[in-house]
Length: 253
Image (cartoon, rainbow, N blue to C red; front, side, top):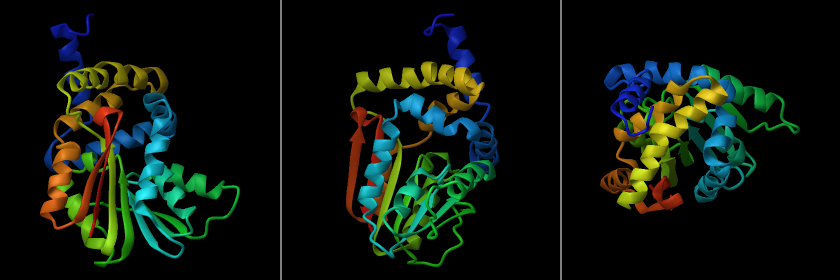
């Protein structure tokens, strides 16, 4: 079957629709997705990005700029990469995620850490309805999560609400390259190659076909930056990686 054939296009559409749903059903579908891939999530991230996701997450932590005794919140924390890195800066860190299976991996990492990390905790919750008062955190981060919310705008509003005045809002996610040729190549990679990696190493092509489907319905770095400005954030920045295929959105409350 050729990648440019109608049959292949139909096949990838059917794959992508397994875990994607608009509106209120989105949360349940995303929960099912991450329950499926949690055991192999870190391995697949390394394979898909050739390990570069670790560098991008370090940049998130650098932009969060937490100091000892700062309060930091990492949303959609997954298996905890960003939360652990924030805790290494001696901040008081809370990692929150909707997926119990992903949190199980994060908590196991915490329990098995070589040294005790007393100022890091993981809790289950909804990034669109955070259980924290206004103006609680010096930094609020999110890696590969805003795109997965049923309302990314609501998720961003919640990040802003719980950040203290002067607090840093940092979002890492898949982007949409500005260059038309590179965007077409990159989207073809997401639609065709990434599901194959998911099939080979996680046994689920459909779980990774979801990435392209979710990105189609997400405004990516440009839309998020505009919304940050609309919400009154200062120092709004876009930091692009790999020609905009990945991006960080930064703003200060």
